[in-house]
Amino acid sequence: MEERCSPFTRRRFLAATGVAVLAAGCGATYAAPVPAGPPRSGGRLRVGVTGGGASDTLDPHIPATNPDIARVINLYEPLLLRDHDYRLQPVVAQSLTSSPDARTWTAVLRDGVKFHDGRPVTPADVVATFKRIMDPKDPKSGAAGLTMLAEVAPSGDRAVEFRLSTPNAGFDDLLGQYSLGIVPADFDLKHPIGTGPFKAGSFTAGLQSTFTRNEHYWRPGQPYLDELVLINFADDDARINALLSSQVDAIDQVPVALVDVLRSDPRMQVLAAETGTWLPFTMRVDRPPFDDVRVRQAMRLVVDRKQMINQVLSGQGRLGNDLYAPFDPAYAKELPQREQDIDAARRLLAEAGHATLDVELVTAPIQAGAVEAAQVFQQQAKAAGITVKIRKLDTTTFYGENYLSWDFAQDFWYTRNYLPQVANGSLPKSPYNETHWHDPEFIDLVTQAGSTVDPAARADLLKRAQKIEYDRGGLIVWGFVNQVDAHQKYVAGLVPDRTGVSLSGYQFRTAWLGTSGEA
Image (cartoon, rainbow, N blue to C red; front, side):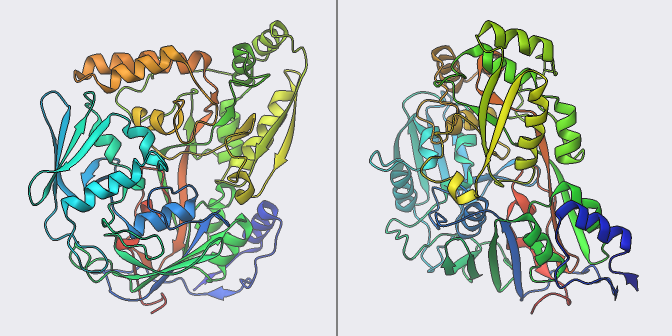
């Protein structure tokens, strides 16, 4: 028997959250045993997920918030996907091979993969899926990364050819995205059907969604759970309290200040992983004052990145250098680490005609640490004569109709390699180009890189493109965030995941409950 929460632990929690531990009073409790042996089938897993709102969706091809992503990953599956170790693995596809010139890629579908209604996946379904994604009248979020895709055509009973207008040696990486789930040719969003481990049940945008076991799932024995429940939480305190009071079995996005508190609770298991997740500050390069590169450079120089890591993440992260995709083999790690330089920042601002500067920073609790990072930046900027007014919104409003219009704001991105990330956020037609970045030299380099088959030549082009973003881009990438989640100890099958997607990549097909979980 162990004490549930000592006075010291309780004081730390109250200081960190400013709320009482609801329905989780201090007293004696028994630590739940860690499940052992083979996975146990059955039960219902209740998961508290950060964010979401009225714009929540079950659409496989436009996930934006954490609840959207969690739903998509459990309802649908792409041809390929990165595993927990950030290795690209076949999923609905059994294999994907390239022609020598990287202009034609052939996917062979895995035998035995069925949709939720029992129908087998066919090449026609894959063709229809990409037609939906690439619809010029309503392009989905993955379309920006597939601009070189000229045609998708059946090639036999189980094969599909992807014919490209230009060579692309990294096309497999572009296909390995959770937002490219395969759906049937007659897909209807009112009755969402995929190949994922769970089938859609009830869905209330902004509140909760439920899922039931897919009896046709192709992985033997999986999923182990009978039911999955995803519950939206816009507030960190409410999410933590829900876990402590056993209203949920697992939560994503543990505030780093509370990691030690949860570790001290004998009922809890903290799940931590080093990732390439980043929480950038975004400056619109087409609007004053950020249309002046000197202002953008100054804003980067006011950041004390080590202080950010320590204060915002409690050390749970790594330094950033205004570049993303740290796991990409071509990541430009040779560029000098940018450090705080207040004198240089002041000089650049004066040259730009801003001896003093007032800016508004739009933030929201979109990811653990986002609001805290805004507050730390506000303090750091004062030394350079920059007054930062913080405008805090709720997540729904932040990602509403004005998203992508803020002059100075924040966002979060999970781990991607460089070219897929560029396609999502750094080109004029990218769906999430927060900085409105449009640099002809940069565009030319990444276009060349995408069609360059030789790995060394391709890496050289990517490093040159990164140097341009490093010198004159609109992103402040101050660090890479360790993913920290938590669950009751009776929950088994969840492992650290380097992709940055929470709770074992939201892949609840492998989760199972010990005897203390809900049956």
